[in-house]
Amino acid sequence: MACDPRQQQRLKGQLDIVLKRLDAYYRAEEAILSGAQEYRIGTRFLKRGDIRYIQEEIKQLEDRKDELENALATCLGPNKRKAYRILYRDL
View 1: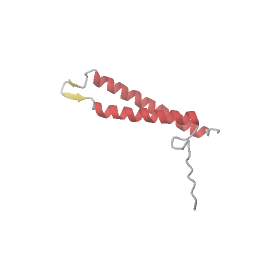
View 2: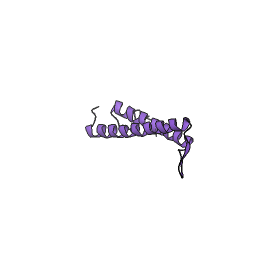
View 3: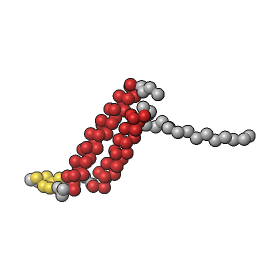
View 4: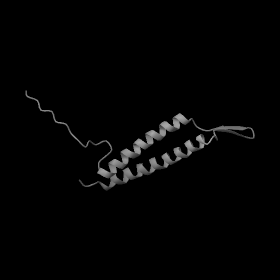
């Protein structure tokens, strides 16, 4: 099956975005785990993100990354089926 170049470019673009976001979430998770969650600068009080939310987002982004990589590898859209089931009925 030949790949549509526009679809392939779109999938690559989406994959690049997901990888950038995933990298940012990994850095945020690392900052939280290093203990630098809250700090004060002068009169300003800053707090890092919630670790549970960040880990959930990482899981979702990793799943999306896998989906896009599989779609690029098989040249199918991410929502296309790869197998079909046929039910024979005797009417």
